[in-house]
Image (cartoon, rainbow, N blue to C red):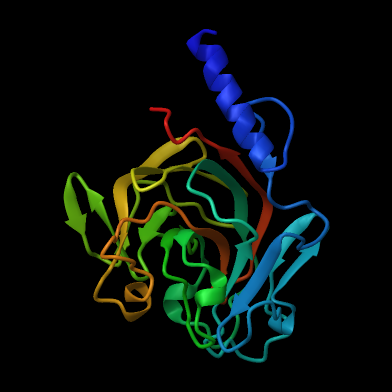
Length: 261
């Protein structure tokens, strides 16, 4: 068996482990285009599984975050968790911002959402916890003028390393272009466990870092540290609701061989 055949066999085995058959390079749909099967909401102030005010919904084959049933945002940050955690993978998400921000949403949350990776299990979140301990791939839309990057990094309860140094800033901008209006964009991530993570927007690499880890000074993160090990090898994946309507029309994953370079 040559190297190419071996790698194909490994990838096929990973797909089979996820309950999917097909080609080794086949992307696995995480969103079926019909309903929220496989996804569980957690909204600040509500129990896990309660989709308060119909925040997350599926219409016309699109997964939508909506606030038309809210009188005021009132700090109800939401996250929609996928059913299984992941560690080594590529993730591809097509998204766009639409409409107007919910009344009462914070100024920084205008045209703001995110994809949370390496997150804590949703069942370990406190009822009033705003964000899961995770690596946040921040999605931002342009405001019609000026520059505003997307595919950024934020770090609720976490740190990463960049250029071999621990990076403790809460949010770090990518090198992406600014995208105004309601255009669809494609975010792609390459996630290698506790190693390298790469963000790409519309096929262009915009950010890279490594060694995602818990922040021992953060109370929520501290509860997740076992035997002093702070590196994060994997975790939950979730989509964010931060007060501005956003849509996701494709969410898919490609498992990677943890031993592959």
